[in-house]
Image 1 (tube, protein in one colour):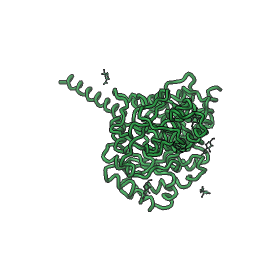
Image 2 (cartoon, protein in one colour):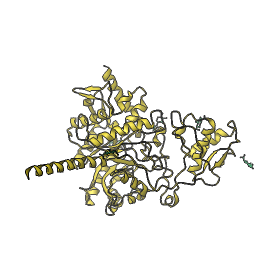
Image 3 (tube, protein in one colour):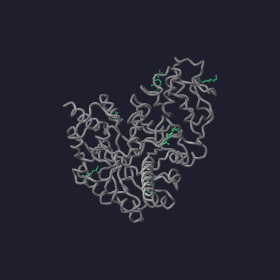
Image 4 (cartoon, helix red, strand yellow):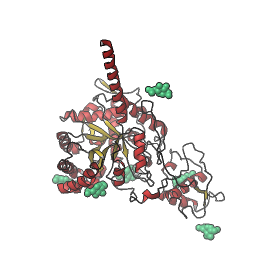
Length: 497
Ligand SMILES: *[C@@H]1O[C@H](CO)[C@@H](O)[C@H](O)[C@H]1NC(C)=O
Ligand SMILES: *[C@@H]1O[C@H](CO)[C@@H](O)[C@H](O)[C@H]1NC(C)=O
Ligand SMILES: *[C@@H]1O[C@H](CO)[C@@H](O)[C@H](O)[C@H]1NC(C)=O
Ligand SMILES: *[C@@H]1O[C@H](CO)[C@@H](O)[C@H](O)[C@H]1NC(C)=O
Ligand SMILES: *[C@@H]1O[C@H](CO)[C@@H](O)[C@H](O)[C@H]1NC(C)=O
Ligand SMILES: *[C@@H]1O[C@H](CO)[C@@H](O)[C@H](O)[C@H]1NC(C)=O
């Protein structure tokens, strides 16, 4: 009996450990942004997440059509509040109570598993010129009070997603980390309030933007595969910028008396198009490196417990503002239609699976007419017109459709416009330079395709179309690039010295 018992016990322990492993794989979160001209049906997206074992999602605002699809899905939700709401929410607890009643309680009671309310989105970016600085903490406090009043104080935690520019290291190493001087005291107040309420701090970290901001950034330091020139901080060698950045925050927290403050990584990822460094190869390398850490439950040198991570993002969004760069519309692990961009190993022999049940518009394309001349005086204006309304970010230098010949270039733009317009009558008429074809055209470039849009059918009318430039979807990264660049420059200088 004895040996049998102990082997049984061992089996249990092993099963238990396997379970932990599996559940940590499934503990992967995604940001689900909806700034798309032809968004997938929310039910298809929810199924996509479930099929892939993603059980956490971060939303940028409370959209009924999205929240409804998450009912009884088993997916945990971090629900965002746009920055524009901060001032009203700060102005009185009754407005916060109303927000919580309508946007949290109503959905929780209908089976949406809301775990966090994310108040604001990177409200302290310096590009916002202190527009949201004063309102953020009072808004957080009022939402917290409203959650308690609604009886959700235990179940739903409040947090604030911040850009990694809220902390910095003046010298070269993470252990010199502290909060940005202009918001230092405010950060302490916020962290204290979150800590008192058992709530986490949420931080967005973007190694891609370090590279985007500084062409001399050592590229291997952006990934998780090691580097032959690590940043040495006392006894620790940092081999990737994620660890160095995250630990700078851990040091900043520790220095101010919050060494065990829980941290969530609210956004992290790598885009696949719209810049020379935004490609499938790099995106796969970065995200696979990140997934492997999550699967293995790996933390950073300073904090061994891994943070909860929400990847940015789930699906490409073709109407996001491109102010930060053309790459903004290409952060998805999935294409606009839920097809898989690249293979990712999710552990336990699983790889990404695509969305099911997607309906497309008819198989027809709008292209440059065979008899049209590429020197036609109207051609440039026609392309510009198409690209003003449709997404041509893939045509730029270093992008998937960059460097097409003039004819393919024109066809690409025309087709984008035609598809964007739901192939409507009259939307393939560029000064008589275009024709509709039912034979699939090819561009001659491997990753550059003439796409067909999603058939929005009925659900298009169920929501108002997203506007592309409101504060929620627009994560201005100018400043963060800059601060990140300065920080990294100091790291690099540090290693040279
Ligand atoms: C709920 O959230 C949505 C989206 O952010 C917003 O438009 C709406 O005003 C909110 N409802 C209330 C009652 O504040
Ligand atoms: C924030 O509050 C401070 C102190 O009350 C005030 O001096 C400052 O003008 C406010 N900033 C903004 C942008 O409203
Ligand atoms: C993974 O898949 C391979 C090939 O299909 C199989 O041989 C192996 O046993 C699988 N491993 C696990 C852990 O399921
Ligand atoms: C292709 O179109 C883009 C977008 O209008 C334009 O910037 C680019 O110069 C064009 N390239 C060629 C080769 O015509
Ligand atoms: C397009 O072609 C039609 C028929 O040939 C002609 O009537 C029309 O004027 C043309 N439009 C333009 C803008 O060239
Ligand atoms: C971002 O930087 C670009 C180029 O430096 C500039 O044109 C643009 O106005 C900046 N955007 C913001 C929001 O600061």
